[in-house]
Amino acid sequence: MRALIVIDIQNDFCPGGALAVTGGDAIVAQVNDMMAQFDAVVLTQDWHPAGHSSFASSHPGKAPFGTTEMPYGTQVLWPDHCVIGTDGAAFHPALNGDRADLVLRKGFRPGIDSYSAFFENDRKTPTGLEGYLRTRGIEDLTLVGLATDFCVNYSAVDAATLGFRVTVAQEACRAIDLDGSLSAALDGMRAAGVTLA
Image 1 (cartoon, helix red, strand yellow):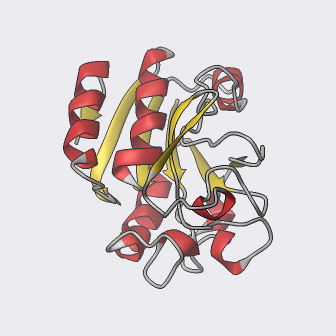
Image 2 (cartoon, one colour):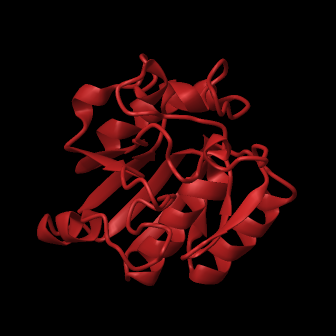
Image 3 (cartoon, helix red, strand yellow):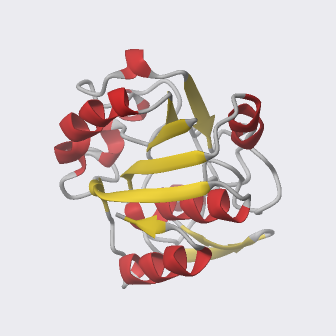
């Protein structure tokens, strides 16, 4: 059984959004086309309460794309994005959400961010996705979406660490590339045993 894991193709990560990834909307048609090739499709959705601890606006004197230390480690501070119930948190309107077997929302705990579809950023608190996939008998995952160097990367490495066979379809991803983060992410995924297609 094979699943397509579609990471965070939301308005705020597409051009015009609060945390736009260059070309983020350019992958939507390809991702829609890929859905028919898989036994299951999972959509992940960044889903932050207002005032989330990962927002620079929650840390006086801090600017977006800086960092701060959290109980779970270093946290990049982001512009406010994907706030629950806003248009920015909605999926890109052209994404075929009807094909999804599961929509997994992450980042909804106010005090901790969640890049990965499998764990919060403390690397311990599970999202429940592993159990869902195991129950369905799914062992082979292909990841697409936004952004290659953050949420796709963390999800792919976690999936490989959990024992899934993992491929990242790079042509159906786009990156932020914050201070060399893309190159580091690609190296890390390869080291974890992720296939970069």
